[in-house]
Amino acid sequence: MKSFFLNLVALFIFCTGWAQVDPSRYGDEISPANLKDQLTILASDALEGRATGSRGQRMAAAFIASHFQEIGLQGPVNGSYFQPVELFSTRQEKVVLKIGDEIVDNELFLYTGMADSQGEKNTSVIFAGQGGDADLAQLAVSGKSVLIWLPSLGSMSGLRSTAERLRAGGADHVFIVLGLSGDDYKGLSFQMRSFVSGGGLSLTPSRNKGVFFINPSVAENMFKMTYAKLVEVAKNEKRAELLKKMKPCAVTYRTQMSVKTVKTDNVLGFLEGTDKKDEVIVITSHYDHIGKKSDGTGDLINNGADDDGSGTVSVLELARVFAKARAEGNGPRRSILFMTVTAEEVGLLGSQYYVEHPVFPLEKTVVNLNMDMVGRWDAEHKGKSDYVYVIGSDRLSSELHEINERNNTLRTRLAFDYTYNDENHPTNLYKRSDHWNFAKNGIPIIFYFDGIHEDYHQPSDEVSKIDFDLMAKRAKAMFFTAWEIANRENRLAVDKK
Ligand SMILES: [Zn+2]
Figure 1 (cartoon, protein in one colour):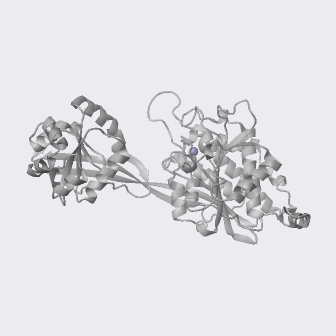
Figure 2 (cartoon, protein in one colour):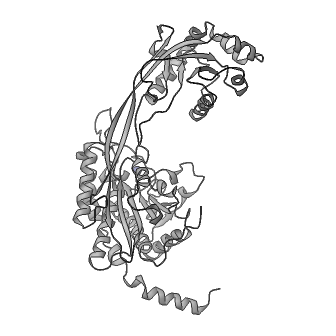
Figure 3 (cartoon, helix red, strand yellow):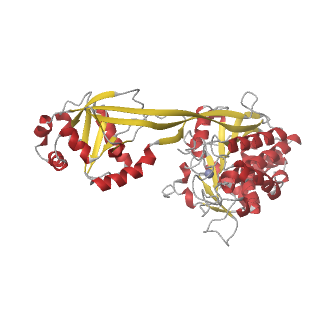
């Protein structure tokens, strides 16, 4: 048990250190009215759902940067508030398959990759049964392509690893024929086509080598053998001999891709600390959303008031009160980077870009506090007390968890719900917003979240549905935690892995 004397010493340090300024003086300034003013602009229809790379998103970026400028934050990217992030959208333009000189009907095959063949290429396809290692060992695969028969599709990841294994064994291209009748094949390829045709965004042009899914009739044409016979060979116990005897098929293919560049920005505002300014606290939200719905009638704009307009205006408001504290001589000892990131909805790309090109060294980055959806009630909590889901606080740093808990008990008194912090929770939220890119680099994080509701990723995620009083409380909970981490003597300890 700790002695009374040590308690007295602790109390003395507490009273003479940074705690001289009561953080409530600033925290209590976080205002529901300000949050509402800002969100009414950010989530308005004029910004068209803030899709990554769109003009609506650029308007949002300008709005955020002008706020940072107005409150006196520095632009930390060579004097600018913008960190340019270049993204790529790769799309299938034209895919052609020929058996000998005969062009295969487009409806009868599907290419799942994004690798551009740079013109027509020839390959020789051999039948490799079900593609087992023993089968491959019998065949001279190297430099050739292989066709394998699969009884069913299985999982996409299983399929990918099969294709990788075949390529590791020397196969040039992988062709797959499935145990599907003509109509079932059509249904499946129709569903898959929109998936595989590309158009998604990535940090580097996508060049993944896919597989050719072919209709059973194409396999018949390749090997001059009925589909039933091919299956019989693939299943035969003595298939090694049979496979070796089959003649390869000469195939010509062309996979032509287009790559479009999409320019977007992370928006950063920097508040320099005092005596510990080399250490940085990063406070994030994502300001992009999913844009407009491409079909349907009525309201087509996904306003993203909650997702993540709510987190974004909370960051702006936290920045304002921290800047005010500094203007009054009570600035934080450590520096604070307020960062609204881009391209979260398309795969956490803006935050990934930041950790790969950090403006401040990651070794000096003490913590990341992230808000993604903090303005609503979910069904589990309606009619109960004010709450927020807290995710990740105890994963890397016991101190962080303790600080967040203690400040909440002392000041904001929200019900902290740790449901989604369970490592085995199926939603896996610890890895589903921008904080994850920091956590995977060993930086402690907290993710504040309001839960999943019926307007998630819908045009009905509107400002009118936000509870600004509750949202302000959540922003305050984050503020007090940030204040203590920024001002305490010791850097937050990382004691878990
Ligand atoms: Zn979000």
